[in-house]
Length: 235
Image 1 (cartoon, rainbow, N blue to C red):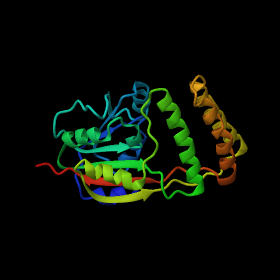
Image 2 (image 1 turned 180 degrees about the vertical axis):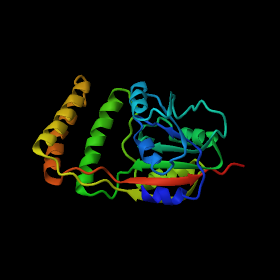
Image 3 (image 1 turned 60 degrees about the vertical axis):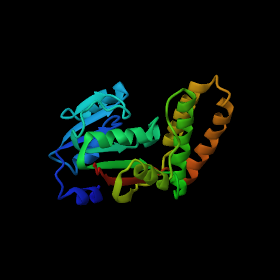
Image 4 (image 1 turned 90 degrees about the vertical axis):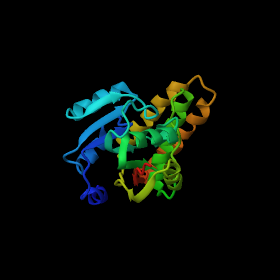
């Protein structure tokens, strides 16, 4: 991520906390910019942390939520959160906690997909994501639909963070094969079975043919992500 490298090329980041790290995908990206940084990753899902530890044996992973970070004040030079804002039960509390554990004049990096100004292939991704998020919510899992780009920056500013820069990050368009489309359809059907006893089952079932048709017509492309770099300014 070239813009990230350019922004931090003259800044010393010795320690960085990745919130909602999942299987450690964003740490892989961050290591391209911060090659001498000690990383710590936290996530409430233990199985994801086990996968992350296999990929990044040099990183310390801990089981905790973003709303209650078990670190002392001003522990890290920076903190990041990637593709996890829409999973947070309390976005503002998580940002406040991230600010608390970051040193004065430290940095917070947010990488989050957004829901507006998407091309047709990206709209397919959004449809699939919202399908999954609906099923998660029906099962009591916090998984919100994607925010607009403006909503993301507004939530960051509302937390008292000063945004220094923001840029979009796009992934490549994929033209799936017939086999890949069938696999995605099967995955949606498998997810649907989790809510077969819910009243929303039929409505969700009717969405699958439309998603399959859209995949055939438009292909698939990850929704655009906005990368926001904000500064922690403490009194």
